[in-house]
Length: 555
Image (cartoon, rainbow, N blue to C red; front, side):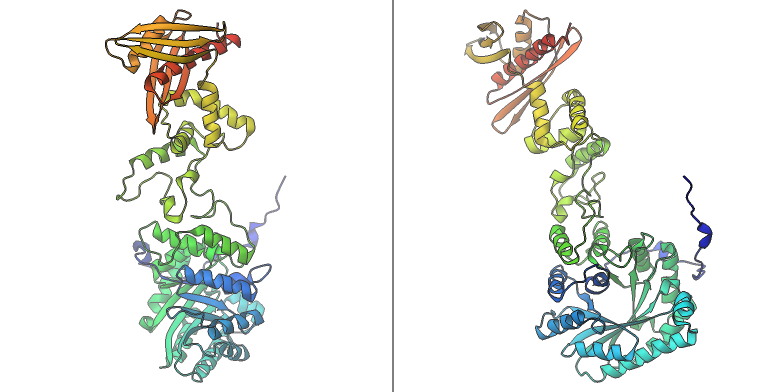
């Protein structure tokens, strides 16, 4: 099959500044930029079913509760639902003192006027206006020269300034976006932004924000970083301007583009929870914040319980979340690979409470965001010995020695491949029990201690008979009991290879490994009494011998 893939239709994007010296490449992010939610606007307009006013209220509550201080609340001049929502926020005093809302509007007089009408009664707000600037938009959409595009921005800025003078005691923050910044000639972008800033440099304007988006992402993140750095170094009145970025995920690099933009001088980031947005989405606010957190930087928002965030976002957007979604997907902290499981298990055991987090394959402690270690290691056909050892230790407190892990590994693998599904710790315990906890044909009835002797009474179901052994000791200890029992066993010539005894709360578990004619047999038992558990474990191994003899597995 041949694909008719015509790459000649496209070319490398080279409309970017040629920086001789890049400063951003040697910097690191040391603090969280201003985080701005676009869920109620950019996120909302990308939905199949846009949010209602009631749904917007639910989303608004979530955004405020997690600690966001700037929220884009909509496009009130273009949508009745957005207009009504903004009025609800103001009339019902739903905006906390430390939170600033933003509204979006095109650089057109009637729309600007309607936008200000939605904000009557506000104390502080961002008026975010924009117009398209890229060559494609100029040539193919507006059929306008650069001068006409600059005139659109200038008229919009002047009319906004005119409207602000009608409202007293309001802190107006004006944000301007040269839409398609990353696809526009950088010198033209500087020219149009300088024009807007000059107009807005008035006493009644609280702040000016210049938002520089990747409206459609066409190139690698390092090019965007160069554009941001060049812009920051060449725009005048830099100290009076906040540089904002708004990255889209067309190339799957929205997070990287935003991070390098911060290195290059951006102070503000526009994003959405879980990355919902046009086409492939916007910058994922949670992923960006968690990236910072994993580097020891406080993201200034509350993400300790992402499940609640996910549930509300899914309710409001009617969109699913991928199980491998960065940081908060259900399978993100789950390892099925055997080598990964082994590394995680060993790392967690060595991790000290107050030291820097150093656990292989887990960049953060899952407990920080409400995930338990139960989700970290799970068993399927791709898993290894460390995986089931971890689960049995976590849920049953059984610490399996390596030789018992090696014995159980093929049994676990066969069960997983037979059913082709994930194995739970309960199912793993059943595999251990069914193959190692054998109580027939021989089972212990009781034992008695008389000074330096031990009398053992067990039942032989093969001949329906009770059997009694007497053993003598100078010191009564587990190894001597096992060796003496094996020596007295006349039906087979057995050799003790290894044994392991562990106390779990009030119980003891014993695991024994014996040899018969170069065949290995494992026996296991659980009991309250240490002597009883030793005797039961060796009888369990002997029972395994009889089972294999019956099945003709042993000659």
